[in-house]
Image (cartoon, rainbow, N blue to C red; front, side, top):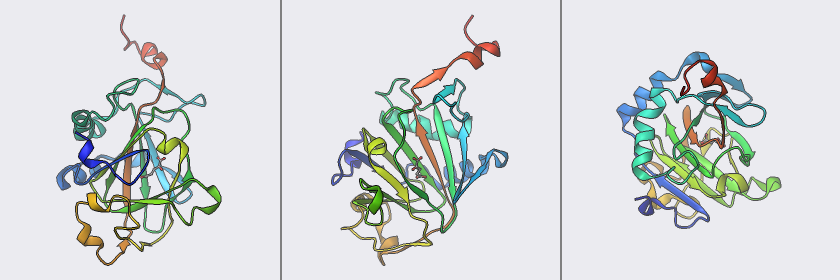
Length: 226
Ligand SMILES: O=C(O)CCC(=O)C(=O)O
């Protein structure tokens, strides 16, 4: 079911699905993001659900809140996105907010997660840069344009071995079929026909399966199986 969405020009496996959620679903999710949970970082703010990982990259077992489950996780199940990961479902979501001009430094993801990352973009488009060379991220070897309401899936070592980041710019430029790996998969390529995309506030939901999960919290609360 994912095959038609594969970004053919990129190794290893990237998949892009435009309009993964509807505009109504997007609004409903945006309205439910709890304002009290933000951590302000340099150039973006962030919240982790159900919680941040411990120093040993362990997640305290807890369900994701309903607004992160429905409709996204149900739809990920339909596509079989996490069917091969240890828990066969995402158990952790990072919510990142970037205003125009903000981004995230090029980085690789650590080994805390299974090698599947599913990112839903809300509110606005952005461009994710991929590179192998930390010293030369200004010339990314590939770029993926993420439209609002789209889903980007990376399977395999893409996030753990490739540097990925979002440039801190007000406008993404030089967007065309040659420079954007998923151009032919875009929902509305005409919106970028002039090669530009003005940044606006974008919120991303990054779904992952954390490998180490501790049930201690559940037992302490008396919620575990007796
Ligand atoms: O916000 C995004 O789309 C990128 C987030 C990211 O790079 C990450 O969670 O590792």
